[in-house]
Amino acid sequence: MAADNPLGDRLDDDDYPAYTMGRAAEMLGTTPGFLRAIGEARLITPLRSEGGHRRYSRYQLRIAARARELVDRGTPIEAACRIVILEDQLEEAQRINAEYRRAANPASDSSGTGSGPASGPDSS
Image (tube, rainbow, N blue to C red; front, top):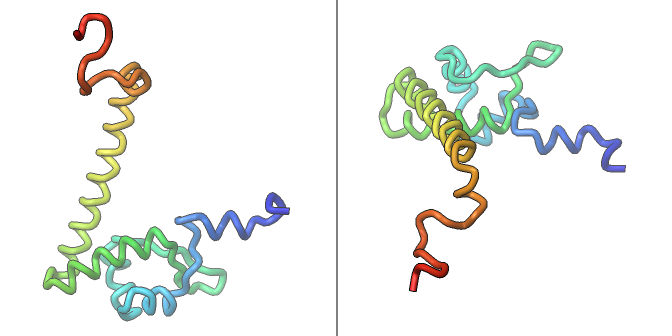
């Protein structure tokens, strides 16, 4: 029966726009105006419901929460948004670099050799 339940898939999807502006603001402990401001700064772009209402995903709420942390520490909202964008880009670049390293050195990942102490017939 789980295969017939597309709602279950959406509830696990970080990108599914499940939260209204009011609920998102409540969860973040901020105002709808803050969410509009970070949208205007192009930090996040909420999807729109058929009625035109903004809808936010869990991923977007995490991004908004990070921006709010910076703003609460005194960072101007435009600067906070730019910082969060750069942090997100850096994280993605680091993930891609790690994938490239794994692809370039598949033997070191699966053999268990590499940085550990030597073992075998020559290590006594």
